[in-house]
Length: 320
Image (cartoon, rainbow, N blue to C red):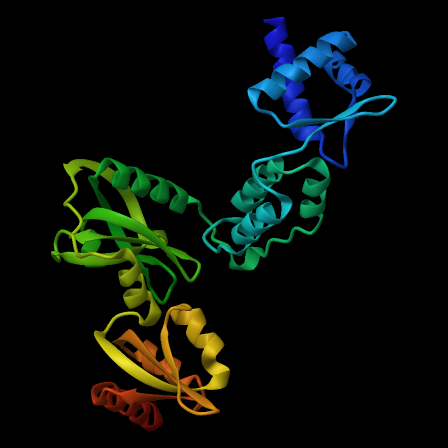
């Protein structure tokens, strides 16, 4: 038992306190063990280190007058953890308290020096963060339901002008077969088969209330249902009639087109100043507003249905 305790303490010390810039000597290790009431001679410590290496811990020995040791390989490199921390910081649905907790956990995957550097440059903007943590519970239950292929039940709400929650349909409980969780514009969305509507629908997870997993088996996902295609269709331009459109754009808009539709979007050079792009979108006020926001640098070429729809919206805007 003593050997097990000593080895575990040694592993914890190596993992949390050492790195390429923070190697330790056998004397340092011995001092750490003494804090836990454990004594060990240098030979025993070297054997323990060899056991950890055999177990899979990448411990490097620097040969010097007094040999030094440190953990070399970790689950993540510092730049990778920085990306994860940035994602946590920017996610609005994660509360400030939860953000700090997650960041603290993420820094344990890097060396002490890197962890200190990452925490030193940490800033969490609480102004745009969520105030409750119920979304984590909902996400966990949705993932469980998807894995176990079971239906979920919940109520769905909107906010009133007084910022009060108002449940849709008088608080009616929705029954949904969950298929996927999608991330868009700082929000999680549940995609699944809506039992009452008899169609695939999406729900913002932070507007879901009282979600529970039922004992009923979920309906099988349609064979022709493609999550990626659904995401592009539903989230690129919100709801509306699905339509294949051709846009004429100034060259300066290529970044915006790729940001919205991806690098595989179909484009063609028209002249030195313009290119055309063919995309499938939902003809909605959101799509027309996006075109309008280009300040004349983008024009709908076809079909005429989309062209007329854009003109109608512009007319209603100018007359309003």
